[in-house]
Image 1: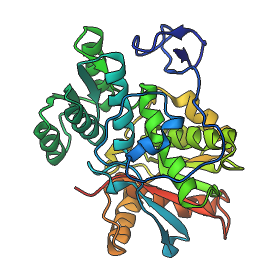
Image 2 (image 1 turned 180 degrees about the vertical axis):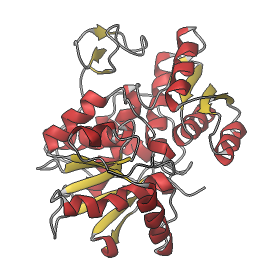
Image 3 (image 1 turned 180 degrees about the horizontal axis):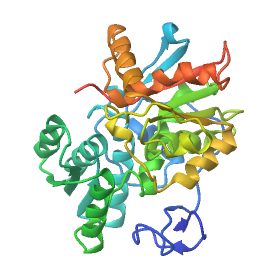
Length: 354
């Protein structure tokens, strides 16, 4: 069963994709393992954590178990999520959302994306033998569009804002064109991104860090981290939940702007296109996660993003601009007192440079 995140109305697992009140749906329960963690093969992708996952079907391209490395120059550790098969953390959610599609009997999946999620969903759909239709901004990077097309998926370019892309995809879903494998709406996607938390804890001998920093657009990884660490605490595998800190792009920072944490820079950060989300459908849940973990969000300028991307590249971390907002925000979090000297911080490097 799925339940509404606002009004608690219950629905069957396959349909609909959102509540009649307009709010996102979530699984009614979070599966939890019995007993303490055992040894993991580290060869089954996200499915090493199947005791936490609500689906029985499996699809994998070898995602998961990305390295957790020391980054002393930043006084942090980096979780190298850009080393996934298609180049971003979205592979985690794509694996589980396509497994869910198989579980409910879907034969064609639809997704809207600025690039990474669309490529991940198209790739895992191809792996599972499902048709895919990916809606992208007409301005999307041509390299990503070509990679999506190579999977055999149908690519639908949409003129206008990122919100217009979502609207076009939803219209197609509502007309019966396919099952909505959305990284923003579908709870199966978040079940996959929660495995990032499970891995971080496992790689640290089941000790949670003080804080985790990640780019924040739709909140796909932000909420996945919160839900994953919460499930670990509920299972008794860890003792604490880290503070979840999000980084947004100036001009696209609805969460950071609410408490005055946005930037005074007049120019929008058009470099970080992966988090150009002005009205995330799970905004209420993002704010709740911030409150529950004593988290925060800040907005990062284009100039800071560009500088930090170059700095990361010079250190051997070849990431896309959206990803660089996370390390760029470390200075802001420390200046604001959100992070203290000596805090144990993990930063998610979320997407590979094209």
